Amino acid sequence: MPIYSFPPLADGDSHTLILGSMPGEASLRAQQYYAHPRNGFWPILGTLLGFDARAPYPERVAALQGAGIALWDVLHCCQRAGSLDTAIENDSMIANDFALFFAQHPRIRRVFFNGAKAESVFMKTVRPGLGASCALQFARLPSTSPAHAAMSLGAKIAAWAAVADRDDAPPAA
Image 1 (cartoon, helix red, strand yellow):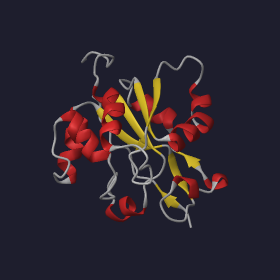
Image 2 (cartoon, one colour):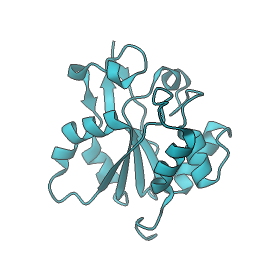
Image 3 (tube, helix red, strand yellow):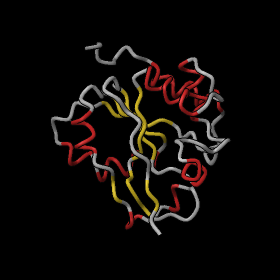
Image 4 (cartoon, helix red, strand yellow):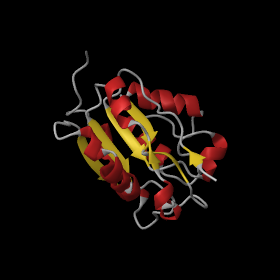
């Protein structure tokens, strides 16, 4: 049975996009990005952007959007048993419509991948369709998933600091 991702969390001020692969079971149940209690996403971004990672979900989303950060997943739908990216059935993957998304969010200049699976699926299924003139900057960050426990939270925060670096964000309109 296929599972489906969430709509993007983005607005007209978004200049940075963070992409996961597909929400895990806890996120799908809660209908919230990064809802697993041991996922490091919210603690990392809360530390970097100065908001309470335990605040209600709408407040955390507002903090991201206030910083110009959008969230989405590479995949629109797929089949997967459990929550691990390694369990995604390759022949079941359908990517989200990024051509439309980027047309609707022209200020986005940076795309960060939350882990290797998001990056590899995007680069195989989406990036070729964006064309050679695509001016987006792409970077993979270490997964915030509790399954990626080989790296400490402190090391992940250091790696994810690039998201909070607004030096290369486009100027406000």
